[in-house]
Image 1 (cartoon, rainbow, N blue to C red):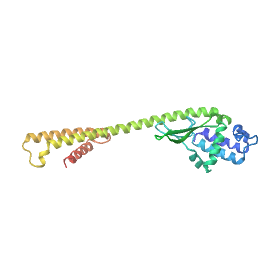
Image 2 (spheres, helix red, strand yellow):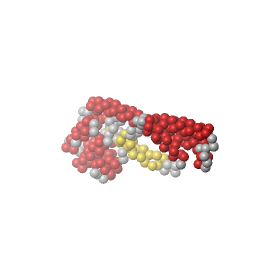
Image 3 (cartoon, rainbow, N blue to C red):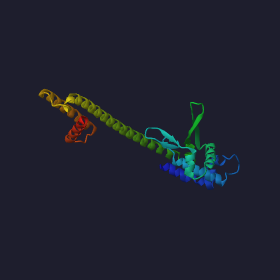
Image 4 (tube, rainbow, N blue to C red):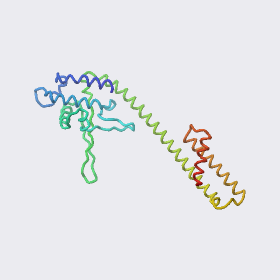
Length: 246
């Protein structure tokens, strides 16, 4: 985990013994009395679960994907991280949201029948939370570093995806060449399975076509497998053509 998140988790523990460390959270219960210890415990555990899955670049709670997307976490999942019942975590999250430490934006999708399907809400940690513990400058520094790391990962993923796409395209090209080779050879050699060659001219034409197709397939296999030797490409090409004759 990034150091600023670990430090925030360490410092917010003081809230349990000193509720006025986070005044807005202590007053979230709507009373002048300090928050009960059980409620403080639930809020701290929920905050820890939130910080554990906070993305530094966006400060959203969830898991970024290599393609540039983001998977938001449900309250049910966060509750499993705390070990508390989901309802208790929901109450704690409501206090945290009311204190202005975390923002929660519900999401839903309208179905064809007019009903709605709920999705995991977008949760984001406020910069105010880090400022309370004097971590605002460190947060800015580490967010810039995290943004650079994310861009690097996205470039590597795009490059890897491009490599896989090119390899698949070369394989498809080789397959198409194989199909053309098989069709041509079958047409030229259709009568060879029933009778001998009628003349030497027909035999030479067939041999020449076979050689041409072998050369073409060797080229395609070399594109698809750059580490193959010429003998390996030739063997693969001849095997592919022989398979068409069966």
